[in-house]
Length: 153
Image (cartoon, rainbow, N blue to C red; front, top):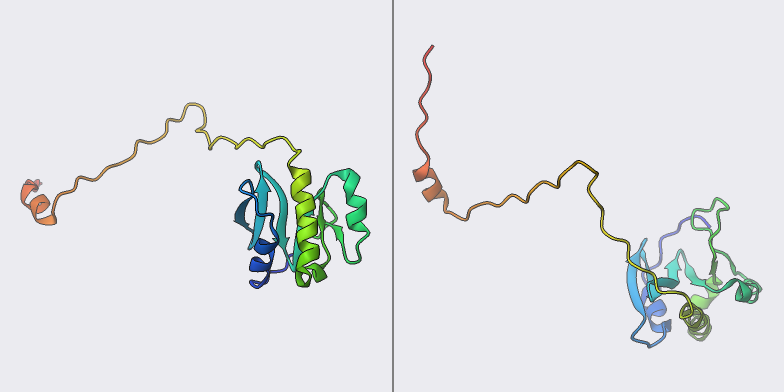
């Protein structure tokens, strides 16, 4: 599916469809909203619809829905393990809620994702020390400057 801007009106519909569970985390991602549990994305807005993750054993039922397809964010045939729900589900909150809840429940069985550590500095290169600027007034700095002597040639 080629990239399409997520309609702003889909954001509140998606958020309302998320499970009311303190383990659900949301993050803005690529102009949409992604929902995670234990660091794993289980649902997200993409284009004019919602993408969900289901285990392989449950994907066939979702793909049988009219308008559903494998998630292909780049539109080049490189599909992920996620499913795009039919666009019509954005107008059917109960169906959207049902499928998102199913994805949430399935994602609870996934191992917790560990955050990757921050970027490291290449070997042999020390990180530059943070420069600090003294907090003095401009007038005081000007008065403490030593006059420079011009060299004659």
